[in-house]
Image (tube, rainbow, N blue to C red; front, side, top):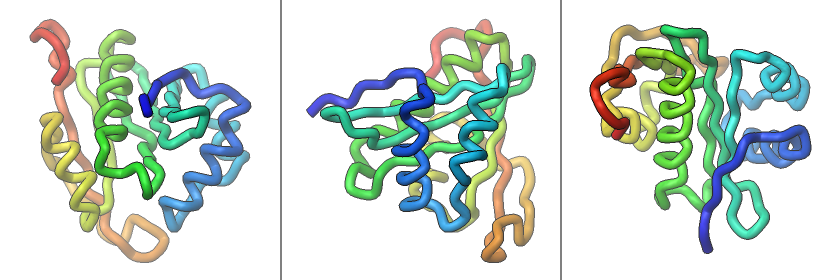
Length: 153
């Protein structure tokens, strides 16, 4: 089945929240999704397969800065390139909006996410000890969006 990306709409919030709760121990509330989508500096995309939401991602863009807010993929769809599609979309949107680089925070023990971000040129710039509610550390990563340097990866 083909995975299609589209802009997140209000009717996607319930499914995105359910996925959020499945994937993250410190899941956002439905209200947090609504607050994020109400911000003009935010952009969220959803990945759907056969009518089912299987992933989503969001970015904050305020040139020259951008920041990945979140990327999540349903557990049974991980490893199929959906996070790659979402990250490509977020980086493209940030670049189109005039951002020159992108930041993100990721759990230091999330090897699959770290491998994804490294493929896209993200480099570690700092660490936030005990950042997550369970005491897990976060790494802060940064990538150039290649503005003026050709296409994104």
